[in-house]
Image 1: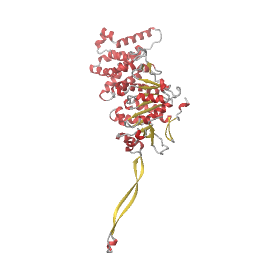
Image 2: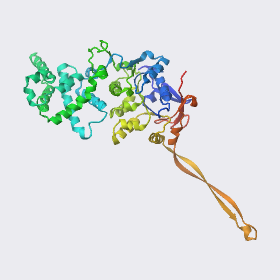
Image 3: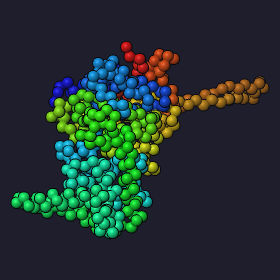
Image 4: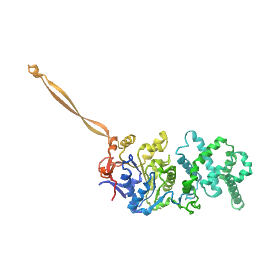
Length: 501
């Protein structure tokens, strides 16, 4: 492993005596702040530049128009412009995600490919179909796809979205189809089964030891016996879950990027595409995914899918063998790219693979909404955020976020002084025939009260940059298990420069 990226490598200084290191960054970072708070131009810019300056590879997801240009500018200023691979719709780039999972080292497992299919459905639908009234149909859809994937793999030696789609779309819908020569001639499902049978026959006649293909038997039994006898409602429900979700991936930009086979030329340029291999990032490349969410559905689903595949790939890396170069996952407006279950689990294990996750968002409620309805979304958010080691809070007016942030810093006992005053009358003179007089008495008492270390209102008062604040952005930072030298407490208040020389 290269000594260049020791965990003690300093990345930023938050004070003269408080250094933020590579080890700290490996534990994940969450940045919150209202629009205009300076979270991107302040702490975000400082962290991004430190990653660029130290030669890290990474994946940058873009939610906003112009965000990619910002990264291009930062990379040029830090001497890393040649490391940027700018992914946008006008470029001939591709990532056949199913073929990648099928052919990668250690890949080819049906259940892993099926899991990616289910994630594609979840990304497209932006809902969890495995719960509630759809749960049965979702499980039945998984059975359908498991058999279609196996059949595709055995018949063609590969798995592609269009082939799986055609097998599902041409599966028999009644026992009468099985008797129809016309259906057999047109059905890719039947043709795939016939191809598998021919391959098995050749194996039997080769003279080599032959073992019965139980997976083919299961596929044949499913498509030729079980599936045709489903009721129309059940069959249409389970098939439509897949066909409706996969349809966008077979058209336009999504097809051009994700569903082309490697040997297929680009319909626009007439050339084969540049393959977006995640391994490039381990060698220092930075994939800048310029498909802004604000430009429509394509941006969200395209980046969410590639992020999923990138995360899985990086978690499989052996840092001892590949030099240990850190890689970062950067998501501003992160709520657009979060996947239920996946991101919370990823945050638990990314540290050991030297993956530096940086998530930026306006408020915690964005995460609740993105990760599911009700208690499920809350639990997943708490799991995800609980595995981000560094939390940076910029100016915010979101009351729930400010209360949550205040709770992170905890409470402490503070002395509180109270003064009691009152009037007193001097009656002794009056009793001796003179006039009475009055005076004021006061008493002071001390008590201890438990107060927030950082009050919720404090987050509303942080400087947001711009000329009025001398182009400085303030943030209050917490890091798990750390007492900051500058404050001797679990918080540190930092001013970040918006403008770099």
